[in-house]
Length: 67
Image (tube, rainbow, N blue to C red; front, side):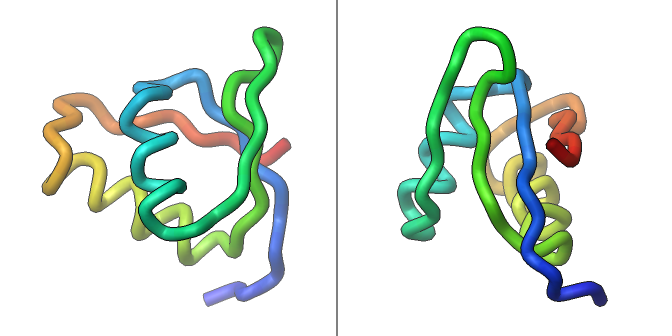
C-alpha cells in the first residue's frame, strides 16, 4: 500500500471519526466548510473506515476524501 502521508477531510460521523483520531493520537482540526481535516497514509484511512463500520457502529461507509 501507499505509505505517503496525505491530507484528508470528512463531514461523515464527525463525533466517531474524532474519537478514533484522538484514540490513535492523530492530530486534526475542524472547520465548518471542510469538517475534520487530518494527515495520514491511505492505508490508515482504509483501516479507520473498516474500524468505524465494524467496531463503532457506523451503518453506512463514512466518506473520507483526499483534501
